[in-house]
Image (cartoon, rainbow, N blue to C red; front, side, top):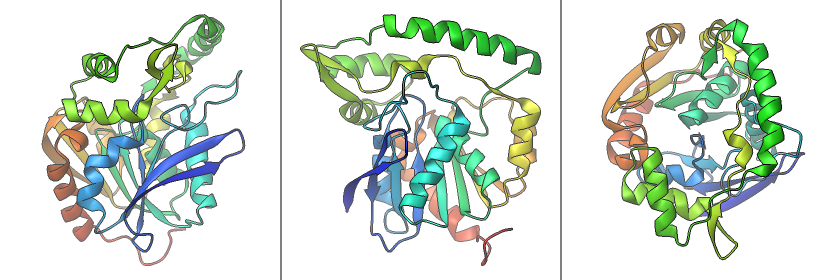
Length: 286
């Protein structure tokens, strides 16, 4: 069972793809940077017997709206948009699955709204990118300067979906079927060809949290948490962050950064076995 969802969030709309029966526990799925909700299509077929996967196109991605002119894509704003999306669906409690950027956002939600999150599953993600405290002022200036240039930059036009797929695979180690899934949802007709639906401003610099702030968020995650790490992934030097999460389990799977797409069976098996072991509290956490 697969359906499209569209929810208004004040500044525009968020779209999502729902897999599974509405009677099953809700798992909100958040994809990585410049991906889209199709990122979870391969995983859904292996998990929809135990959960309803609601896979959201993050703001500026996929079929979701772009933020208004003069605004930016800060993680905190996106985290609040996801909570408002859940409010609109009447979901007072839910679990989260996040890949890469989506995992960073999921962690912020689990930390800030512990009474609402039952389980947290992070795929190739353990907190947002951070920076030194002294770099924040330079980041703000860079965002201003680059945002003034953004209207002058044009998105590439491809003569076919296959051309876009080839370009997408150059950016990240990604199987052909996985790249095709992302491109089919992420492309739109433009000027006689195909171009990305995503907002060009997603490539602009943004203000980052400092590492102490990231650790403070991670320390406040109260729900059972699973980190799925790929052997050829992008997580390095995260030992201190892992120690900060109170109820963290780690499962390592052979593969690259998009392991949940390229090997959905192994990823789903790791998730299913962990869900059977990691029981959330009977009552919402304070």
